[in-house]
Image (cartoon, rainbow, N blue to C red; front, side):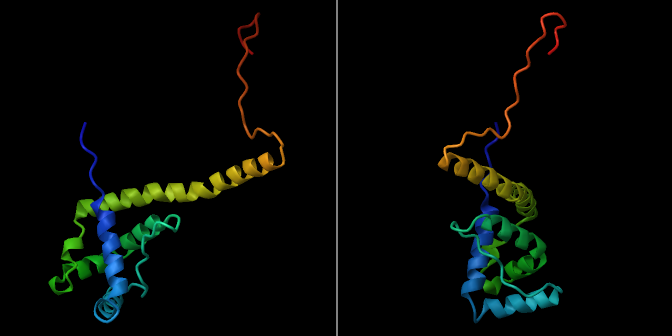
Length: 145
């Protein structure tokens, strides 16, 4: 079995977002000029924070849409961002991970609805089964149900 690759691309993108946010006098103005050069809307890169649901998805979605600007920023040696540069396979992994997280992001409201519905029913001591398929019983004469 092949070893599972470490997701270094997420860590690199986190560091890029953190560095841009915390370099308001040097990198941030260059970031906005880079966005303008590439015809992208001027905004900050979302940060992936553990206390905000699906912030990894938001960061990856942004990074993929703005990959041209991120690549331009990490290509400049003077910015000390080259160590965070993503190669093409890392961008591919970022897109795959974004797609997986997008599905979980779409399913979360459904899961939360049914969980809260179930918890609300438990609080009121009501037993209710949302969906439980009944076992099939064979009819003794026909072999069907």
